[in-house]
Image 1: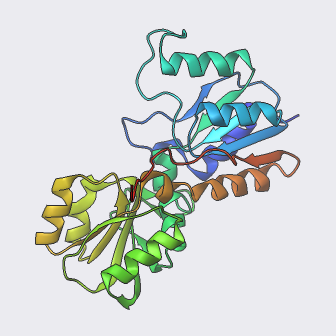
Image 2 (image 1 turned 45 degrees about the vertical axis):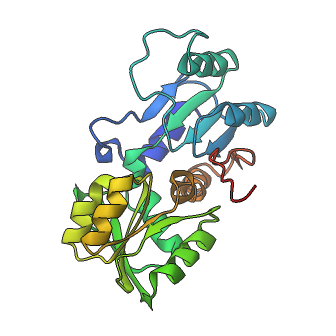
Length: 266
């Protein structure tokens, strides 16, 4: 019998907890470690649509990238969004595991998958935080190279590769050659990206001043969306689970999507 704790161990073997940021919250955030697992739902976010889909498939566990709980919860009741979500999972006997910044930083995690999805070559860790048990570097941002091209053409490639409804970009007048990528909110890494001599940075959740500063400092910026830059890692989560537990039934959410919408006319 496979238990929740067995699944947790396999996932943390792939993305060890020591790789997470100090402020982060990862691991088993809801449920019993000893509960049996036969079916698992994988998604980027622990959201009500994912919960309902998990229940419909008879899943006892959801595995996500983003955590169910960020800040300490003072009460578990239906007066808050977090409390309502926790109550629903508890009442329906569904456990919740997440791998967040540890999966961002891990070899083969969010940012390696993003770099490969965008077709980067010579991929490396920009500023390694250390080495894993296999001697591989880990860290947040990945860099790589592409065949020289204009920024507008590369932005169109990013949009297509990640199935983005649109991308925001700032053109610093640089030909795209050396690219840095950071899934999700990595605007704070601009200084490190510039220091490594990258001409282009693909990330998400960028602020107005990021675009202004980057342009005048000679860095092309592309904001491809938080969901779109991270959602490809769900395939990696499935892969880890299938390899460790061939007998488990793994489902990837078909209903969960980016809730951001764009009005382009009208």
